Image 1 (cartoon, rainbow, N blue to C red):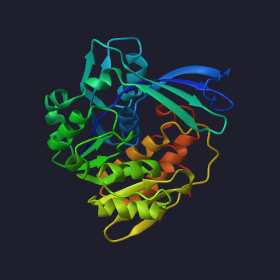
Image 2 (image 1 turned 60 degrees about the horizontal axis):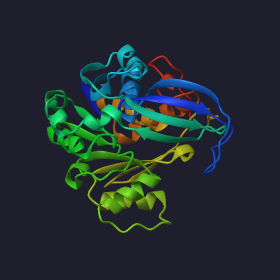
Image 3 (image 1 turned 180 degrees about the vertical axis):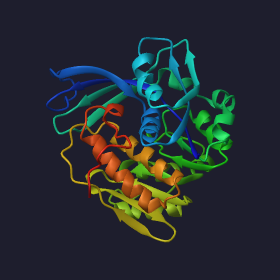
Image 4 (image 1 turned 90 degrees about the horizontal axis):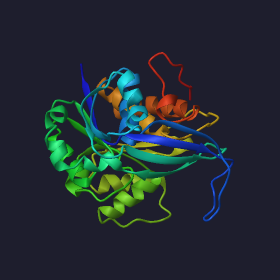
Length: 301
């Protein structure tokens, strides 16, 4: 069976809901206060595992109470967590405010995720080397990111979110690079490319190809996505849904994309499936709790 290894972050998400996001210096009264499993790496791994993929994870949590909710879905979804370390520090935390329209703001404290450096990753290189696809994000140290790419013998899929400084050669191994419009502009700038603030999504995608990426998937929220290769730039529609909480919807997209690529689908068809999974995730509260399984009825385009 084809295997996906995710090298990335594991967080506990502290979620508060409010009518709107506070202005600078303003205090609002919200509702809720859930503590849920999160972290971009863990989110993407759980999304893939719940859709039937064989998934392994490389990462770290702290020796604290937050590790329990942070690991809950990874353990129940059958992910191989033998390469997840428990360290004498705090588990990564994300404080998330969700407004009435479903949009969110997030502040992250890395905690144990900051330990996933080159030495940490190299010690677990075998878990990476035997994967058909390795999926990476931007929530671990750049040295760990580079070490993970170096250990990859299969296909590297990179969702550099947040956009942090990483080794350019490692970043360009992405096939595809997965980014939203904002991230695409930052990545182009990081690679020394001129960025037009008014550039269209299609222009951004073509710019990333010109910078050296073999393929690009640009996510556009409710407008869908673009898949760009040397042969074509293809628009990917997304279902129309009533968003409840967009937290982790992009991560659901990433995990679902990997599932279909592992199954041998082309990038365009994999992205069409991923768009439906991402839309499904936005109709539920939280990140991992909102993700579909193999029996879920996904929204149609």
